[in-house]
Length: 348
Image 1: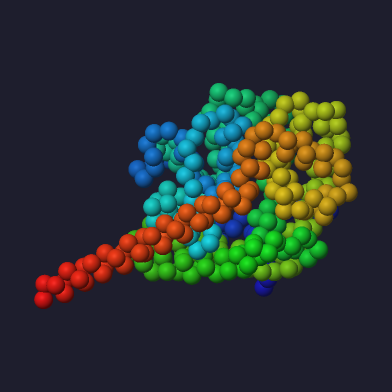
Image 2: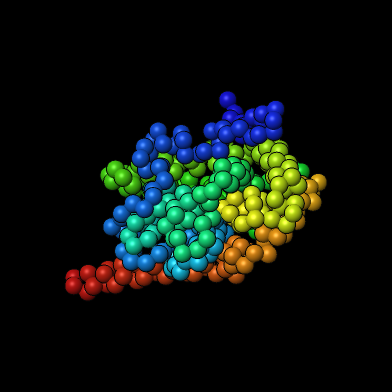
């Protein structure tokens, strides 16, 4: 039976379904490996400083970069190329940091935190030097409600899928995405075989395969994508109601006078959908949403952590470097093998 994205309640709320949490079924296979890590000591992580393992175009990497920028944290970036047949996220060295085989991963003085939303909440608590994004005042419940609402938008499917009536993927992305998941699947199967005697790595790969299989089902289904678009339109209607009735109507932010984690999450979500050209389809009838989007996208932290990372040169440059490095490694291995063969022949 084909799974659905989720039912829509009479009050317009998009109910959570199994497809909004792809890790749930995978947890049966991978058990503890799919649970988010929070400040967990890890001998494989850098033992000093703040380090973020990320991919420039990744929505969830943007989320982690954005909270660190908003908090004014100095950190070191480590690029993990998750596309184009490189798939750094499946290398055992990285899997020992993040058992979900995904980006981002935050390491602080040898302690690991995973899952983008979890990173946001942990970073807000861990770095007190800036304003608290999640307030401890009377607004905390509405801030959490709006943060959760923004998080409920299935941005990944909208970014990489082609929903009926929605914007088409750029030609270069269309070809890449059609082959990318298949290549990921084949790479994981290969890695699973290579590391079948390592219980930890094996469990991580099994969990990721289960998740990837579900993602492919969603992205290849027009009905699923159509349901996601319809659910997102209802979420945008809810956002519009909050904007025209709440503090934003008088020049404030979504939940009050101060910028909060809810604004941050909505900024990230709206910016990605705007750059993917979904504005007219999803909130074209709501001028307040568009004004809010533009206000958020003008924020320096969003420009620095999100918009400036979505360039062809930034993404393409990383992919090119990784491919050159892979090719150089293969050439070096061939040269070394040839040299060993030559030495063996000379000894005969």
